[in-house]
Amino acid sequence: MRTGALVLVVAWLAGTVSAGAQVLREEPLVFGDGRVTIAGDLSATYSCAHATTIKGCGEDLGYFNFGDYDSSLLRNFRVNVSASVRTGRRVSFLSEFRSDNLREPTPYALFVRLRPWVNRRFDIQAGRIPPTFGAFSRRPYPNDNILIGTPLAYQYLTSLRPDALPASADELIRMRGRGWLSSFSLGEQYAEAGVPLMNGLRWDTGVQAHAMNDAVDVAVAVTTGTLANPRVRDDNAGKQLSSRVAVTPMAGLIAGTSFAQGTFVTRSAAIAAGLSSNDRSLTQTAWGADVEYSRGYYLFRAETLISRFHLPDVRAPFIGTPLQAIATSLEGRYKIRPGLYVASRFDRLTFNTIVGSSGPRTWEAPLWRIETGIGYSLQHNLLLKLAYQHNERRGGRVPIVTLGAAQLVYWF
Image (cartoon, rainbow, N blue to C red):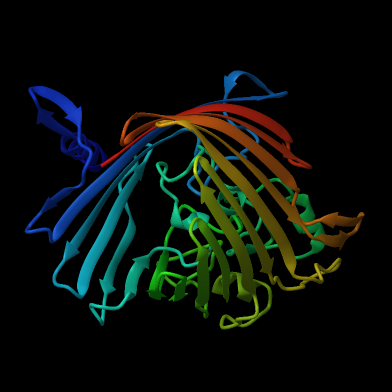
């Protein structure tokens, strides 16, 4: 009922009467002498998948596009409603509530922003805050994404779980390509989705300091959980420290670097592995680099993320080394004419090798993706996107899946 009410409210807010006709609202609602701003966006996405095991218009049975809420991001109806309330020149309260596929709305963002000095570009944010790490994390909304899919680093589910651990290298290797439903012998015993390298579907909870000028943008944050598993409530003895520095040496060029480290494994899983509940050695550490260049009709972006997970050695054959993953994403866009563009993205995700009973193998199945599409603006804030996506993985029950997808995005 509450989800239905949210959809009805957004639909009502979206419409205004102009010249006797119903049109889509283009600007956020602003009232209270500019102190209160309400905005929203809706996106409807549908896809058809094809593979050797899929006939006709099927679902993504390779789970290449699944998030951590047991649903495909390419078959999704999303409603976002955000609000900003300024109580003065120094204090603002910001929130956003999200519903996917008509589920009950949940808080995606909920934080206070403090500006100690009105004339300086410095602020402190506390609560459920925007991510500090990475470039794509700063444009997670459908209208900011030049394609429909999400880069592999921010979405693809590996077999790793913070609440369940493999006791040996053999256990981990058996789960290659099974991230949508993995299980291990230490910790929680039920099967559950694994985690991506960085969860692009949830925001962090903690405190962030942010400062910038015309050439440099710096942010530092202390939050709960890790990039792969951002949390509201703590489930272990550690916090995550993350940072990002971006420079703009010339018009149209932005280069950034990021770092993050936090305790990854839950208390209960650490105890199951024979460690202290306060052990902080089971971490996720990540480094990132990104660049963006735009000029005229062209836009080019590149991003690399390196992540290392430290897991315990419990039984032979031992894992024996930090589990490393490297994700690379290249994307570009060309505007054919006003309101019409073409775009493409290439993603690759690779993993380091561990030695099991049958010899050396990567701890997760390597994969790559290419997505190509077009975008057409039906009006300033109503965008139609069509895309073709090819996924290929060296492992898993369904190693190759191609999809055709369409998405309609509206925002105000």
